[in-house]
Length: 241
Image 1 (cartoon, rainbow, N blue to C red):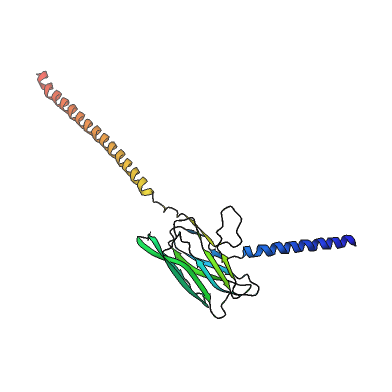
Image 2 (image 1 turned 90 degrees about the horizontal axis):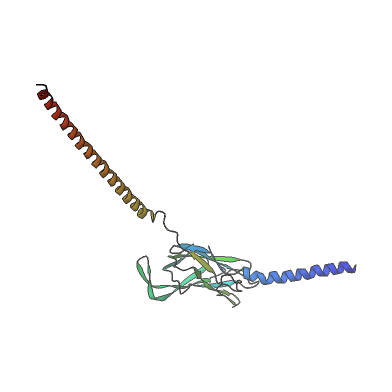
């Protein structure tokens, strides 16, 4: 009987520990994120900022996403989200940057979505906020610091930039990884082909020159032999007489 009670107590203790561990780990896994998480430098893309509601009683009423200052984007546009208003803030870029041959002197610095009526993200729900951006800068990563405001006045700041190889911070900022664009197929081929064609032309020219010279020599030899035969023919009657 005592052994049975000890087993029950041990199982109960493990359950409490597991609940505590899961309870601590849950918020870290349900943070604001960007989807997709990877894109190509210099390209355009559609991205969604996914915002889960982590409160048991309050709803998410406002979401603010800050674009990185060290990686300005020339074009930023949003897709309407039913029940939400959106506002874009801009900042001056000094010095201006060149985007597809045009000089950009300002860029979007922050996007703010605000819920109206009953559109707030309720407990147990999440909402996506689509954004189109491009051309994407020539950097390896873009960290989008985000602020999530709840109906009870609480503000969660997702602003900690993760460090590669380190543990994920408690409130990580959404991070977009950018990879270099692959070279276009055949970009270097014309140069190589041109070089090969030049070599082929040179080889063909040399071969033609050799054959032409050989033909000329053969022609001259034929003329010489023909001349000798003619001379012999002319001399033969005189010798007989």
